[in-house]
Length: 333
View 1: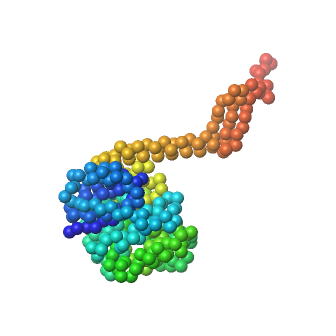
View 2: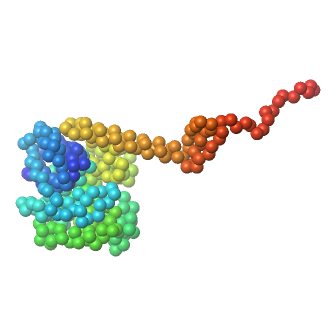
View 3: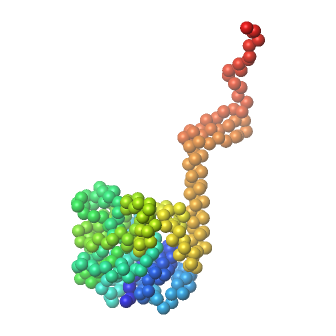
């Protein structure tokens, strides 16, 4: 069986693209047809990807699709998401040979056989996805983006998608998704994910959370500590959603070790370690700045400067005490 997997990346995310691809091949014996929605990956990074995956040379193929022709710049560039997120809208326009494809984000580590996910029946739905897991996501979406979203509807995550490409083509879903995106461009909070939820709000198949598990939200899954390790072994996909919650930003989040085990096997390991170091130095500087503006004491030429909650106080080093010291009495009893 051949499995067509689509991933979207620009140059900045190429190390994590490679890590995701490596983890897929490490756990899946089926032949993988990788299709990369290319937002400007450099040739040198493509060569590093090839070198990283060399040991799997008979298990996969790679095709890069130049996304510049689709004018992704027309879509909102949110501070935490680049416009490459919208590239998945156009997958049906890129290939004609598949009836069903799998799309994956590249902040993902595959922990099991991807066949299990791809083999899911679509049950006549055009798309299959996992819920975004937190109730608040749907509430925020309804409040800020799409008030028409009913309380009975479920908000799903677009980082792992099974797509019936035939239905997309026959019903011209691509142009409809673009239309919705442009209509709500000033309200979107989660880019393409909000658009998918507006359009497919009552027309998607819900997948088991094992196919899109968020380590940062593990408490929401009601996992007992005694069952945690066993459950984590059964998860097929770990998805590191959220700003500042990526393993290359924080090594202490749940299952970050799984990411690093894979990353260290790729030709990008030095680059990823450098990214981690730079991120932590940046966080350290921010923390120091915050702490220094909450409380600090500095010695200057003739005085000390105290900073408390951003307010500065000066005290001269030569300042004499205003109250005389108490002396012991010579009066005998």
